[in-house]
Image 1 (tube, helix red, strand yellow):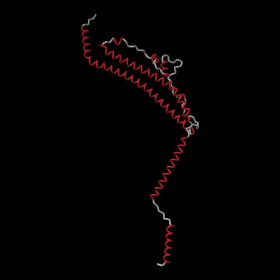
Image 2 (image 1 turned 90 degrees about the horizontal axis):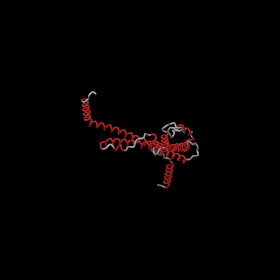
Image 3 (image 1 turned 30 degrees about the vertical axis):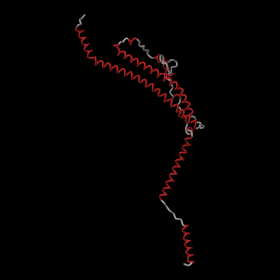
Image 4 (image 1 turned 90 degrees about the vertical axis):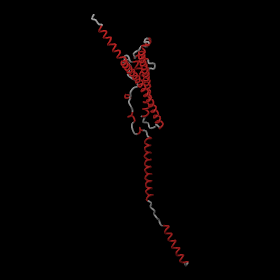
Amino acid sequence: MSRKRLLTLAIVGLALSTGLATAQIVVTDPAVTIKNAIVATLRQQVLDTTTQQAEKLYRMAKRLSAFADLNRYAISDDDTPKWRIHTFLGEEFLYANPYDAALNYGDRDGSAFEEVARQRQTPGEELASFGEEGLDAEAAIAAQLATLDVADSSIIAATDQTGQLRYNGRKELAAIEALETDTLDPSLTQGSTAVLDKISGAGLIRARQQQARIQFMTGIVEQLLVDNKRARDTEAAAMNMQLGRLLYGRAAGTSLVAGAANDLRGWKQP
């Protein structure tokens, strides 16, 4: 091959290679396109959600008083129940004033209850006079006396506990009113620390109220126990009488009829 022909072929090859290098070949992959579209949509949703959360947090950071009047949530003093029972100023009650005072302030030694309760005699030689033949009667009286002791103890403890709770409830009411005043304060200068202090105070008052509720329920349970014991003693006495009638009823009835017949036979008109 001549040198001239080789040069011509080289020029033609260089021209073809230059044309192929400058050409653009578009390659389309449907799977990659769909994936990119889904990723772009998810990114947009995440951006929108984050933006909404930021706006909500910004609104929450502002005090509620900036959007509404908090005074509508206030409770007037007339609607709040008082931590006391009947008013006894002026001696409206003739006989129950000491016990009413005990229900307002407490009665640790039970003196107010003794003033309004019926006095009972202290057993002495009466129980000793039964002897061996009266053991059942002595046991029945001892059980009734125990019921009275339990009832007296429960009533005295419940009266004192109710009075103490009512007396302390006045201080609790003052704390609630102070917390209400601070909570309804429309000032925008209060920071998050003040809000947390209010939440802590509300939690403390809630715990105190739960404790007082449990103490009230304890007094009710004690009274129910006394009532149950009294009902149980009554049923036990009735059952004992029924068993005694079944055991000795026939002999007692025969003796009664025989005695009545003898009396009728020996009766004479005066």
